[in-house]
Length: 404
Image (cartoon, rainbow, N blue to C red; front, side, top):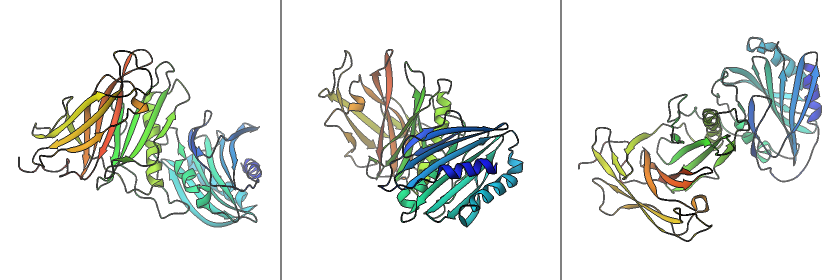
């Protein structure tokens, strides 16, 4: 174990200088983890008496990022103390340990070390699971900070994808205060909607909402996921949606949904959002009628479509359509709230054949409306979700209705 650790330390000895890196998602094919690397990592494999060590290393600007996986049948969570001692001794050989604390990822125990070397500052975490240890390390050149290197993003995006380990356990970030409590997804644990759209959760005040879309690509047969953070008050997207595709055709849509939840939680922590709440699911039919479960009317989401200018050629009966959606609430002002009014056909929905309300979620004075649009798929007609955030409602959709 120590031999492999020293080998890993030798691989992260390169120093570079430059701008703050840009991260993209990376899912290992041979090992149970995913993480955001600032580029494509180099994979090296070594074997020693039944022990296999794989290191994923990337030199980017003034920092070196690495994930090392050791596969050995003798590694067990109950023996984690011995693994951590070997890890600690290996790191001490090249650097001074500034701090140490216990961490975990689901049922996998871990340890975090903050280190200072002659030319490098480092943050390293090791997790131990059955038959494997996973070590995550970033080395940063003196004269630069963890924040400049995006260390928080690298570590918060790391996830063990082996389902036996379970959900992540948030830990304090390297440059920030302790992370908020874990989110409570809107869907029940282990479940996902059949229509490909789930709400991961709202902030308690309803000002932010996180949506997960998932499915399987026509033709290719591989599962995919998309996570979008919305600011309901501004009716806008926060940053860019996080998109990924699972590499193996053997991985299912359920696997993509589970992966999306892990990534969504990591991004929530990175954005320093409070723990999420499920919000309320509002009964919604294709006419746009919003009702309580008992049938009491809440309001109506009016959706109208007009002919738009094509951004690409559409095959009949599909055409370019401009969408306008307005919300009328019972007991509210007579003047409706404009949810969206398109003036240009979006490229992501270039050719459609009608859109209709599908689902509605609310929390506080924030809401997320889901439309289902008919589009042309790889092998015939398909549906595409359109997500519309809205904040500053006249009254909360998840509360008691005003007098009718």
